[in-house]
Image (cartoon, helix red, strand yellow):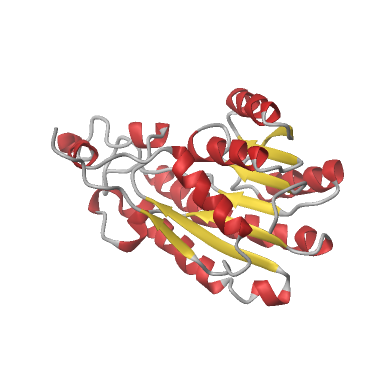
Amino acid sequence: MDIQDKVAIVTGAARGIGRATAVALAAAGARAVVLADQRQAQSEQTAELVRAEGAEAVAVETDVVEVNSLQRLIEETESRFGALHVLHNNAGIGEGADVWPDVPIDRVGAIVDVNLRAVILGTRLALAPMQRCGGGAIVNTASGAAFAPLPQQAVYAATKAGVVHFTRSCVPLAESHGVRVSCVCPGLVTTDMVRETGVGGPGEWLQPVIDSVEMLAPEDIAASVLALVRDPKSAGCVVSIENEPRKPS
């Protein structure tokens, strides 16, 4: 898909990978990028960056785990811009400072809802408007944690494995609805979420891993998202973006 003049929604757009993807879509010629997040002030900052790249931008305060909130997001996008071509299901959370199994029960539910349920709901709700404008592309954010045990973040890893399997199960949508669903699986990225993970946890478990690899930038992941949007054969594709080992100083 040519991104020029297309309309996109990015969830989790207030910071990190979502912000980088929104800006990259604008730089690639998107006509409009709708920014969905609960952090409205930060989303407005992303909107300014998107406008600086020449695209229209609107920040819509959205709770991705609420069907009505997601529905309003998509309806507002289609009403305001007349179409929906691209959806980046990117919003996500982890265990935070705690490690499994010492994660509060309500946090467990939130991780499942934000990381997996919202991806499924967002995909389901985007199909009809994408069909109305001739098809579209959905890119989900999974994680490298989907492919190997992660004892400290067992819930996060399980949800990301679910995103990968859901993505692969959506391959038939390319033929039935004209919508390609794919996903990116980043390694460790310099985002606020990574900085907030494992802080104060037993042994500061994540820091040795961070010290051993070259961190990815959010822009690295955004580039892969755009490549999947453009690729007409991307249905079901699962792209891993891995960290290189840190070179000895």
